[in-house]
Each structure stands twice: as C-alpha cells, then as structure tokens.
Image (cartoon, rainbow, N blue to C red):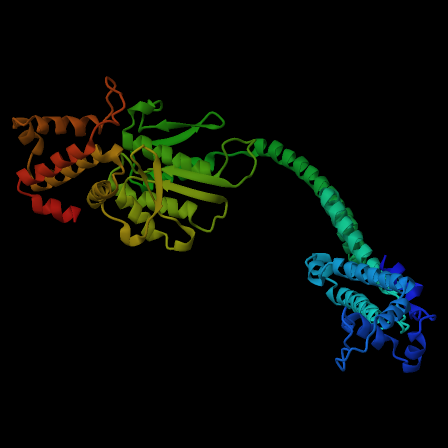
Length: 507
C-alpha cells in the first residue's frame, strides 16, 4: 500500500482554485496562491474586518469570490491528499520498532546488516511523509516521493532469509537425534579424510605386523611340538635311569649330622625306602618318637623338594610350604633345621618360585631371620585371628618382634584396644599364667580351686575349655562375654599382689 501511495499522480499536480473567479487574476499576479489559501482559511471570518488593517474591507462579494475560487474540485483534491497523508502515516507507524526485531537471536547475529537496511527504509518513509505534509501546506507545489520499493524488497529479502534459518533450526530440533548422528558422521568423514595418509600407513604396518606375528606363532607352535616330543623322550629315558641312592645317602648323612644315630634308611625293592633301627630290619613307623617322626619326614620332604616325586614328573617351578618344622623337636635341632632350610632354599638355587615358612616358635623365627640377610626378598608376616575367627595378615618390622611371653601380652593389649582376637584370648591368658607363675614358683590353679568365689572356678574352666579340644562339647562360644573373664584375669594378679607386673605388661 505504501508503494501505491508513493505512485499517486496527484503529488505532481499544481492544485489551484477556479480560474473564473474575480480573485484568480490577483492571485496569479501575486504568485502566492499558498499564502492566500492559508490566509483565507485562517483569518477570513464571518465579520467584514480585514485581518491586517481591521477595517471593514471584506465584503460578502469578496468572500463569495474566494469561495468560488476555492471550489469543490479544489477541496476534493485537498481531501484526497489529506487521506493519502493519513494512510501513509498509519503505515509508517505500523512498522515494528527496530528493537523488537533485534530481540530475535537470528537477527541479532546480523545486527549491523539489519540496522542498515531498516534505517534506510525508515528514513526514506519519513522523508516522504514530510514531503506530503509540504504538499498539503503548499498545494500549488509539485512534489516527487522517493520510491521505497527497492529498500522494502531488500529488507524483506533479509527477513525471509532469517525466517528460513529459523525454520531450519526448528526442523533440526524436531529431528535432533538424526541431526546429531549426521554431524557425527560428517565429523568422522572429515577426520578420516584429514588423516588418510596416517590411517592407510597404519593399516599397511598393522597387516605386515600381523603377518609376522602369525609366522612367529607358527614357529612357536612348531617348537612347542618339538619340545613335547623331546620331553616324552626324556621321561622315557628318565624312568630307566632314576636313582634313589643319592637320596638315601643324603638323608642318612643329615640324620648323622643331627645326632640321630638310632635309625637309618635303606633302599627297599627298586624305588622305595625303609627305616632300619639298629639290628631290627622291619621296625614299625609308630615305634619312632614324635621328634624322630618329624625329622625323618622333614628330611624326606627336603629331598622331595630337590628332586621329583616320580619318574614321569616334568620339570617345573616350585612353591614350597614348610609348616612348623621344629614342633615336637628339642631346641638342639633348631639351629640345624634352620641351616638346612637356608642351604637348600635360600642358596643360589633358583628352582624355587616362592617359599613360605610358618612357625609358632619365636626362637626359630628369629634364628631364620638372622641367617637370611636379603631383607628386600623376604616378608615377615604375623597371622592372627579377629573376633569372627577370620585370619588377619600384617607385615611386621624387626623392632616389633617379641619373645613368646611378650607376644601373649601384646594379644591382650590388642584385645583391650580393639576387641580383636577374642577366639584366642582364653589360650593366651592360660599361657601367660603358666609362664609367669611357673617362673615365680607358685601354683595359681591350686589357689583358685581352693577359693569359694564362683568366678574363680568359672575362669579356670573357661581358659581350659577354650584352650583345648573337647569332643563332648563343640558348641559355638561366640556369645561369651570375654571382657568379664579379662577382668578375672587381672584380678588374679591383684590377689597374688603382682598388679604392678600386670600394669607394666599392659602399659
């Protein structure tokens, strides 16, 4: 509509009054039609006074001539211009404010371009509006309105492109998953293209390496097959050449070194041993003392570790477990057993993968610790029980290693502080009492049995019952309140007037 108004021909017309009026000649001579029009409309009243000299010079005839001059045709044309002016102004006011457009994020991104297009159009429309006002004030003047068509088309083209972007964005939101997948594909296509030389080179290298690996694997498989064939030959020949004479000699020499001269071992049939006690060629194994049984079993075990159990056994790494090798032995053998272990297992022999030595005897433990100096290859572990009878493993330092008596007291201290080891507390308290009162020459059991205090007798039964197996009563004792018996334990030292010793050991 704005464009149509700008094309109206009336803006190029000279709009003047009726040429047949008496005043038309005068107005032409004055060449000031617009001045006359404004004066007539503004100052000629119902009376006859001149607006300038205030004399009665304006007659009714003059008024009629002016009316005749500004006739109906003139008024209609002026009304048409007024209407066009109003429409043009309305259209201009209907254009949204520039800031309303800039609230849109897509337009904001191109703010400079938009502001330029918007300003050019708006300024052109404002200029045309002012020109129309001049035409109204000076009808006899021709005006030419500047066409807004090109500026309007540019701005609308810009807004159409913005709307396309908005539509495209909304479409992506609707198909978010598909768009993201397309983006990922495009990204990897670009990456693949950028690193084409690297990837192609890698694939060639990889194929070459895989081919070489397959070749090596084939060679390994062939070699393993040959090894199996050779192992089979070794085992077949080993069965023909196995000899137990060296083992017999070694065990008998060890028995002699240990001072056990009451018996020896001899070869029995082809691949077995028998025990010989002096002149008795068929002694019963049960006739040996516990110490003798232990030592002969231990020596045989050492030989087994060095050799093989059967002629068909293959060569392999070994993990050795030695569980308390000096129990039931006199302390005279502790040094010899420790030296045997050192000689066989901690020498230059790398045949053994791991070696575990378990013992309850601190004396033997310390002897092993002193003869083996490579501390970085050895771990010293204390194994204990928690309140649920689960095993606990804690590495210990040299300065934490105690004698047996101190170790028992340490268990009690740990129980007092953390309430752990409850399962072994009865045995611990029994050992402490037996060690201490035997050393000072007093019979604590006899004194407690004489006591009229029920708690004393209950305590004795408790430490005895929980220290030894009892086939008649194997029930779970977890509900016993160990703290009560710990108090009874302390009371014994108090009653015998050794509370100071108790406090010293418990710190």
